[in-house]
Length: 491
Image (cartoon, rainbow, N blue to C red):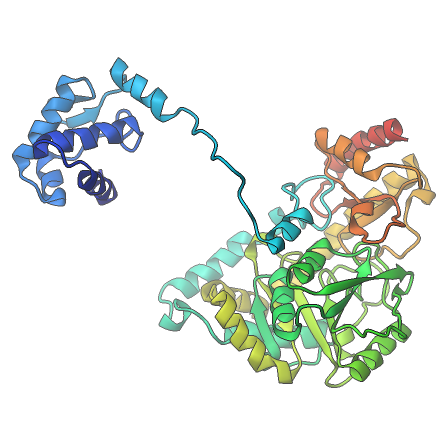
């Protein structure tokens, strides 16, 4: 028994006030055995050790042990100490049954706040985050874990004190500098390290800017269909959301809106979930509109690294000097989601207030892993990993398209460009129930998501989001066969 168990007994002893000390200790030990704190065949400490930890005499412990042995809770083994009995006495089993009896439900209902009810009423986070065909899930098994672990081990042998305490600087300076260099080259983002704030992902970034830049009742433009996570964060922070339609050129702005938005949220490089690209003309329109009305454009660049043909689209943020754009990115798609590291590139005037607010709201940390990630980028491993994954995902995407064309036909593929990203959208007939089809597929182990649930407006299109990145070709074929059966029975 370690000191943790001694702490448990000391707490129990404070509640046991009746009778001599050795009887109270016996009852505490018996209770620990019944509750499983001291499991069957567990060795009790030597009486002298336990007496020292509890601050009692050794005779007190010996008397308690003897009572436990007499009642069948423990066994004494010559030369090897005292052990919890493998089979407990019948009275103990009855006590266990009583202890494990279901707790009667509390009377009355738990009252949540209006904000809490709103959040839960629109919750969209899925418990299914891996397998065919989870949209947006990268192949986490292909990440060079051993290589990354070696970097971590080297850097963590003697960590500096300032990496073990809270951070108020918006993230590790090394990671911010490495990201600034990478983004300037890979995404044409105009920035330096001082403009970068490290977050725990897109969600935290959206939460931060909606709290700091918006008041209750402010308006936000949001793509429709669009990402449910951004929508819910804006809603719970009191913004009025105006859904904006999407076509083959991306978000369709209403330049005559009498109530200009505070935020304009877009996914310009690869619209989520439909896949279109925000055209140059639309980008220029949005930038001019944002400057004229004092709006902020929130650019979610969630998977731009994975483009499989044609020229990469540069970030909207770098199109004009000092643009009114807050650029957001994440390592969830390029490395793995549980890393929980994202970043924002903000205009210089916003950098200091947002950095201070982030420290106040979230108490920054994770500086050791941020330092390792910075080294991973600096040594070229990050760019090499993206190149490998781009080839792998390109093959899997082509394989899935081939299955769709062979067994369903070209009409089942969306008309928008799908040469980027980690998912495809499968068209369904207008009268199809994509929610029911997705539920039917899930019962058979295939995880697709219904397109209609990404819309806010009633004129919803029917379809299914199919992620291909984390599915090997052999498993993809089997899963697609199951999905086709679900489609056939649902048509």
